[in-house]
Image (cartoon, rainbow, N blue to C red; front, side, top):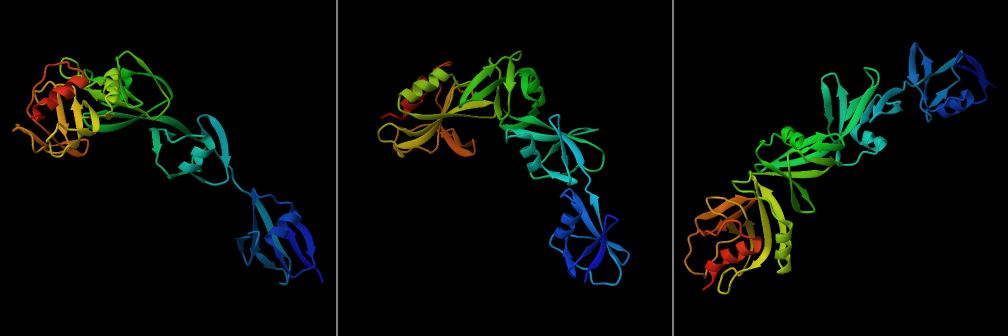
Length: 320
């Protein structure tokens, strides 16, 4: 016994009572870019590959296919198509080979709209959507981190300061491998993504720039050091600094500030209040810097000392 049905208005016969969506696709050579439907009792039902349809009803069963719509979009000028009306931020990154140092934007009539991580974007409604990537750049100004977005390529220091709302008279430095490289306003910086900059108070006040060679001098003394910044000041963190004999604790973390702060030409902040040393004026206690509390004594040094000289001078009053 044969059972009759039509597929895309063509008549067919089948020797079994049931037929699957997959078998219908093979009979009609319907590719995966089209959807298959079953017309029954005045409604159209989607037929998946696994679904079985009973052909033993009275009359002729009717099937048809519809080509799925293709939604067009571009990523950094390259054209793409999708059968889905939505695309995720993750899919855009993968298709456009966009790394984590780049942010993704959608061009709109109101300007470029930032696409958040894992966000889904409807690409169906208004023709071709255009996505583009921009470099993520971090600027730390007065202790607060500001994220700006720039096209890859060369940008002036003045432009970067303007976008990050850094004062014109402040110094901007780029952080490269933990070192601060001071930049002139007219200088050009090549931007790829994940660049970091730090603003500092202008020279004439405190410069807050850590000279590379002075940092190396500290390392030659066997000290473990790194550079950080906050509030327009740069600091050298010295880990497990050994204090003079008799001090308790004998080992502390320390922050060297080589610029004018709190009316001192330089400062040595310690992670703990020191006991067992001569009486000292601890006039700065629980000072919050870099998410930690610090302690410092009232001790004035000459201006413009090297980092090593600052450390040596500030340790003198702790000696018995």
